[in-house]
Amino acid sequence: RNSVEVMMEKSGLNRFLDAMVSNEDVSKGKPDPEMYLKATELLGLKPAECLVVEDNENGIKAARDAGCHVMVVRDVLDVTDENISRELATLQNP
Image (cartoon, rainbow, N blue to C red):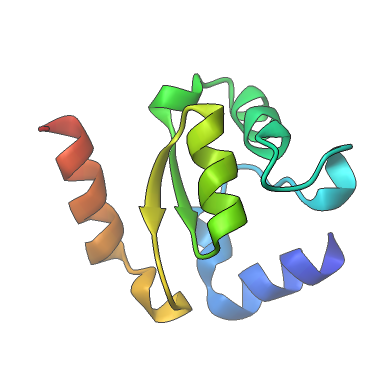
């Protein structure tokens, strides 16, 4: 969990997070959807109300299997306000 927190802080992505779930918080890792289901529960949201930003195939599968929307990125530089806003707009106006 500590490594995830450090990575999020160094990348500046922690400002986007209202909750954080790591592999230490669940019994099954990705591609099982447990991690995302736990995160949506912590946020008090339904999975269909959440946008997950993911960069690996197991995470993408886990998020989709949980019922979340997924923004696939290939690099941390893809995670920008503009790209996230664009993705959210497509979800709000399909």
